[in-house]
Structures are given as structure tokens and as C-alpha cells.
Image (cartoon, rainbow, N blue to C red):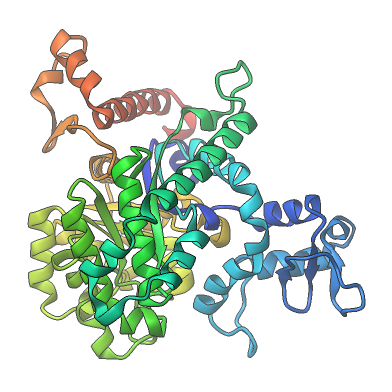
Length: 462
């Protein structure tokens, strides 16, 4: 089954954080190249050169010759071999704290990170990748510090950022340009030695960090909406950081109001929101009642990331029906949910969403930190619920149907749109020319045809 699913065409990955998509080994290699040191006692990459008098600090370059130290660092920077201990007892806490432990190498290696993410997507037979990134984040946060959110007046806050907004958007676009140029050079795109990742279409969701002050959060969102409005590479926004964080919980309603305000100003910008990445063990019952609903009904989210606590939402059945009617897709991250929340198997709401006819897509979340990939999420889905081959194809097709890439869908319900009943017709060619989404969907259908032809002639699968 693993061999089968590795080669199964998977459409898109719509919930993928670039910073979390990279392996610990790559971070340690870059730390070595940058002349940085690591703290074995803290399990982190240090932002400066070594202070050799500090016990447990060694040059990252020495890890090549010290397997024991290297293993300590890999375990600390990822979920590799995670076993709860009295000092590190929570998969949730270990997962989220790992980002701070490899943060010193992130800024200088964005291009290499993008190249790796694209190659990994190609290895998983993904044709479209929606990556969450935060270009110019530091400048946006600093701008928020300079423009306090007085009396929570969002109109005044938006107006106060009028002069800063173009500068922040320009910086974010330059950072993205640099990242993409570096990645293309590494992947050797448009050359005979081009990597498979060159064939993966990539778009971005600007991700804002929700555990900061209201002014800092609003400055990120204000600039992020303007960025997505101006730069077609950015197809929407999202929110990141632990949803159960005390600030994220206390300011959740305010954050939804921020999205509603800016969404009204930029109606062309799409929104996917992390919501319901919670369990009763993380927050009190009152904190489980409305995050998914508020993301849908107040913020206007078109997709929900995780959505694990749906059964604890107030009037969950009505909410499920609303999501089904409005076609609000849920980005299900099975490996991540098992590691962070301890929710898997029959306890996971994947089957519930499917029975309620809520659109579902499978995605990776942070495949580098999780030591996973999209194939493993599909395999977990097979063990979580009863899926036919047709169901697997629907999950794959959903990942392009509900992607934020522009254009009319190739699919009209369960059937190819009438214009492309004859794929070689002029009408179909004209339709495809006008729709990026339809072109990707046609590519997926061609991949399905090739895969099914190969499987039907492969003795291993007979």
C-alpha cells in the first residue's frame, strides 16, 4: 500500500508551513556552513559564534564526527524519536518549541528551503503547493509597535498605516523575489538538469503570527492583505502559532474582527484560518465552543485548517451543515494532529466531516518537523476511515478544487465541465487558457490516467 500511495497523484498540498517543512538535518548543515554553534544542553542552534567556555556548546561543524551529539540535536529540532520525559512531557510543547530552536538559520536560507519543499512535493506527486510564509515579518512587527491600536479602533489603525503600507509590501515582495531566484538556481530550472521540483506550481499564503500584541497582529494583517491584493503570487492569508496560547485565546474574537474588517477592504483576498486545533486537555470547555464558527461566520474563512475540535463546538451539527452548504473545506493534517494533539484513528473527525459532506483535503502541516510527508497522511486516512479508490481521487481532486489559485474549475460537480468533454476542442483550449486552476486540474487528470495505466500493467498490484 505504501508503494501504491507513494506514486498516487495527490493534486495539491494546501496547508504547508515552509519553516516547518524542512528536516533537522538540513538546519544543522546550514548552521555548520554559517559557522554557528549548537547548545547540546538546550538542544538549539545558537545565533552567534561559540562561547567555548559554555558547557555543551560546540561548533555545528563538529556534529559530522559526533553521532551522539547529532542525534541529540535532531531529536530536539523535530519529532524524531520523541518520547515524553518529566522535562519534555508534551508532544504539543516539543513540536511548537522546535521552531525557536532552529530559528537562527531560517533567514539566510529561504531559497534553499523553498527548493527542498518543491522537490519534496514532486516526490509526493503533488502538482500544486500553497506555502505559508511571512516575508518582512520583522518590519511589520516593528511598525505595529510604532502604531498602537488605540481603543481597538480598526478603522483608525488602518488609516495610521497608510504611509507605512507600501514600504512593507515592497519589502515583502523583494524578500519573496530573492527566495524564488535562489530556489530556481538551486533547482536548475529551465536547464537540462532541472530538478523535479521545477514542475511544481507554487503560490503563497501570507501567515501572520497571532501570539503578539493587537497592534503587532494588525500591522501584519494590514500589510498581508495589501500584499495579497497586489502580488498574484500571494493567493490568501492565514494565522499561525499555537491556538491554545493565552494571548491567542484571549484575543481570538478581536482577531476575527480584524479579518472581517480587512476582508471587506480587500474582497479579492482569500482566507484560510487555523481554527479548532484544540482539545479539552489544552483549553477549558468555554474555549472550544466557537473558534471554527467564528472563523467562518465572522472572519469569512473559505477554508479551515485542522478543525479538530468540531465535536465540542456549540451547535456543531448546524455548523457542519453550514460548512457543507457553503463548501467550506477543511485541511486535515492527520500526522500532525496525532503528534501535537494526540488525536488519531476513530477519535479524529475526518469521518465526521465526510459523513456531513463537508469538503476535505489532506495536507502535511509541518512535514520536516513531523518527519513525515503527504504520502503518510494519505496512508493514515486509509486507516482512519473506509476509503475506496474513488474516495482517494476525490480527496486529491479536492486539493485543487479548493485551492486559492484563480480560475474556473475544470470540474462541474462530479463531472468534467461541458466545454472540455472533448479535451482537444477549441472551446476547451480557450477555457484552459483562461483558468490556471483548470490547467492544474487537467494535469492531475493526466497524471491519474498515467498512474492507472501503470498500475494495471504492474504485476505487483495484481
